[in-house]
Image (tube, rainbow, N blue to C red; front, side, top):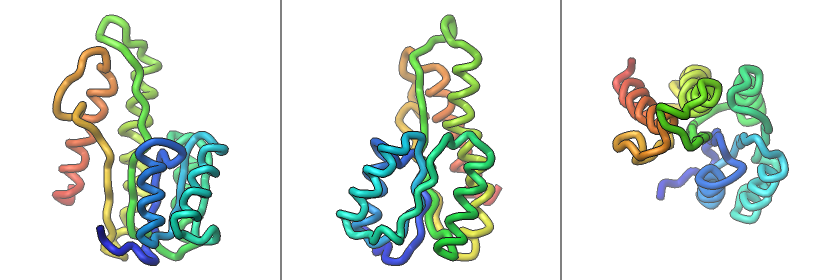
Length: 175
């Protein structure tokens, strides 16, 4: 694994699952962390796990809330730069999925899935790119096999992860 000592990483969806696991791994590698998630209590548990893994608590920033909230995204980037002076890594991990088919998909659920899994990634990436360009930083977009292979009953989720795969490829080309 790379040495992340002193590198500043923003991780979305850090209050559970892959996001929490990523945060703990980055803490073990010496990163300074800006963590966001919807569940404040779980986010604090992630913070505790990161401190136990080696990141001092003064090198962890928690920004709790909905990643679809425009102000939260701006605050996350601004507070990260204000606290740490830079951004080296952006991990777009926050995601949701709901069981649905073409016959049962509620458009409000569809929109919410696309907002969390795709739109928020695009906007947060746009906000971070100027900072990442300065540090020659890295963007990690977490998606799943659902982006390349359709699974039954996950219409909007499959579509969002496929679009995220294409977004990642386009950004890598500098588009």
